[in-house]
Length: 221
Image 1 (tube, rainbow, N blue to C red):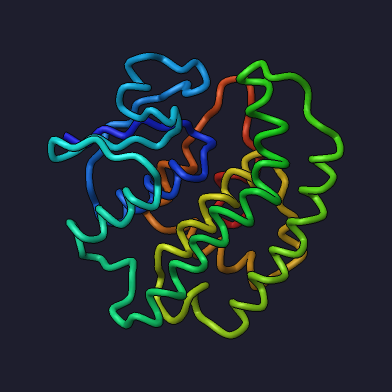
Image 2 (tube, rainbow, N blue to C red):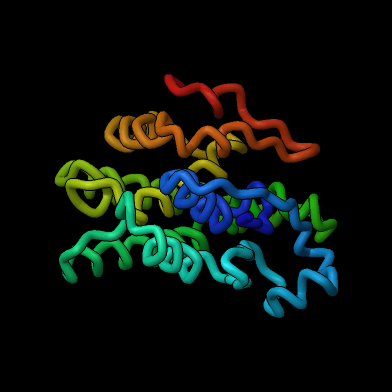
């Protein structure tokens, strides 16, 4: 049995969930209010962060480490290319979304508007939200530029880079923070990845107190 301690609107948890589903691995999801810092959860991950995956007698934390473990132990279907240069590009883009995009966009919008209320950490910071609204435009334009040259974000094949990007954008789409009219190319890419069977669980997510936007689970927007 594979157990994943997660929070529904964590892009890092969603990335892991997408990899698990794409590789057709059955998993039991355990909702983890990580902000409560439960001692039992901290015993599994002293950093107090999700996701945490329990499998094969191991307890794994950090989404990148988990995804790499899954790629190495369940190599089919492959989500990392064989060529070193191509693998490096995938890892660069995963880092881009999990670091730069997360810092400039996800943390400024989803975390300010949703996480703060759930964790009772105060009201959204208006300046942070404004900065996130501005930054996402740059990132959507960058994604559009990449996709004008490639079939998928990192090249001709679907990779972990696409799942990392989709994980963040799906959280933002849940709260209606993506202007899909800005780039038809990015919208078509997201519609394509959103239609994959691996995405069904993500589209079924419900966060108590926060209803998704009406188009969230609509494959045709």
